[in-house]
Amino acid sequence: MARRLKKAAPETSEMLDELVSSMARIKTQSDALKEERQETSSALLNGLKDAGKSKHRVPWTEDHDAVASIRERDNSKIDPERLKKAIGAKQFDKLTSPQLDMAKVEAAVQLGELDPNIVAQCTDESVTEYVDVRFNKAQKRKGE
Image (tube, rainbow, N blue to C red; front, side, top):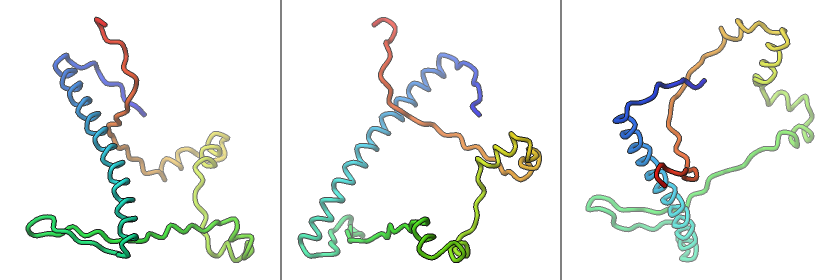
């Protein structure tokens, strides 16, 4: 739940303007670096493969080298529905565990089938505050 904040003093507003501008600049640089990293990584992977190498090392600092190695990450995902059809529901149920369905909990509370106080007692709440910087079209400024 969002909290209402009181209006900031002009000097605070100027400080916030600077901080938001700084975050926007950093986010733009970060996004550009992520894109550059992905492009460089793809080119390096292709270069290593073309050279028939799985690893390449270059001097980086006086004490360290930079080493690029081809790695593989297993992104395999089992399709639960296909597996259930293939092995049968009885065996499938032995391999799975039920999870709490929040939509069903909320519906049961709204229908009066579940006491909201019990749900509250069984709920650990935590809120994390963070700043999200987005880029929106500039609005007209005073004097323009």
